[in-house]
Amino acid sequence: MENNLQDSQHGMSRLFEKGDVFSDKCPSRDILKHVTSRWGVLVLFALKGGQTHRFSELRRKITGVSEKMLAQTLQALELDGFVLRTSYPVVPPHVEYSLTELGFEVSARVASLADWIEDNITDILAAQSSQSDSLSA
Image (cartoon, rainbow, N blue to C red; front, side, top):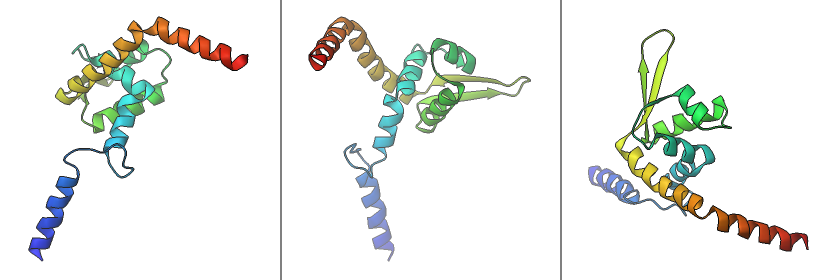
């Protein structure tokens, strides 16, 4: 019996040694969703410089995000181990957000994608325009 339990535990750990985003049962799919969501990308990009930010600073920096969406995004990224939330016991409450070691790693990858998009924005917009023109013709 103990052997079967050990085998099943090792089987489970081996199952998740590396993620499989194509599997609907793999937790990596949810993590990918958090990291690549509109607000997830922008939060990681905003924090990638290494400094801490208060909630209100992040909200001003990421224009267009609602308080609710920013709070949900920060919570998801914190649960995934990418964002560190530090709360200070003062009145009014003072909370700061920064990246963890894992967060720095993933933010560098997200920043590369954002940089590539910004570097190629003219070509992308031209492609969108040409597609739009061909669809309306």
